[in-house]
Every structure is written in structure tokens, then in C-alpha cells.
Image (cartoon, rainbow, N blue to C red; front, side, top):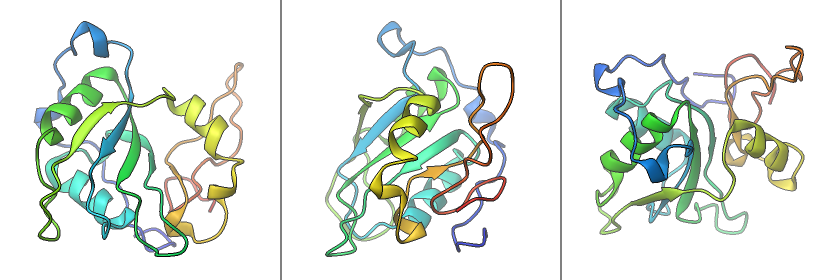
Length: 167
């Protein structure tokens, strides 16, 4: 567990994640939106389910928006996978499937997100108001943003935890 109580994402270990090439319309897709998630899911529960299926270490950004009034998620999440083949594999794994926790009839759908890539998501969410308050409700950045020239922008692991501090 990280200091925030969110389970660490283990390194990619599932041989199934030697992802096949995605179809052409997913060739540049790394960030996906998972829709129809049960509203009782927490960030930690989603991370655990992703890890149990073999996606631990396959993504560097995760954001499960939480309603501050109800403390329930809004039914969708954004994930940035490390490569397009992994994004396509996540789609084919979760599309049309029910999540394992809770007895929900919601069937997940996965589509490319409007913002694509770690850098675009970091630029959008790292300074927004959603990146303040309860750490378990913040966007989760799991790597350091690299600038041209190789210098990092400091630890990008904010939100619910991550590699390299922050939060």
C-alpha cells in the first residue's frame, strides 16, 4: 500500500498483456474512458480489479471522478495505458462485462477518451481543482512527467498514491 492507503500497482506480469496490435482506429489510442462502473466502486477497488485481471503496471494515469456530495463515483473512469495495444486489450477485456464487486447489472463500455496520452491528462488534471482535497478522489499519476531534454517535472505521483512520492 502507498501512504494514502491505495494498493500499489504491481509491475506488469501477465503474459496475456503482450498486447496484439490494435485495429487502425485504435492505433493512436492510449487513454480510455470506462463507462457504466458501479457507483460504489472506489479508486482502490478499481485498481485492485485491474490488477487481478492482469493490468497492474499497464497504465500510468487513472482518474475515477467522485461526487463530493455523495462520495460515490460518477460511473466512469479514465485510464492511460502504456501503449495502444494495451488500451485495445483493456477494451476487449472489459467491454460488455460486469465488474466483479457489488451485484450491479451495469455493463461496462470502453471508448477512446477525448484527452489522449499521459502528458495531456497531466496538463489538464494536475492543476485542476479535482487534484485537491481527499487523496482517494484525486487523479492518480503513476510516473514523472518528462520534459524535452529529459528533466522531470518532479514527482507526478499525486492523487491516491503512486510511484515516487507526491500526494
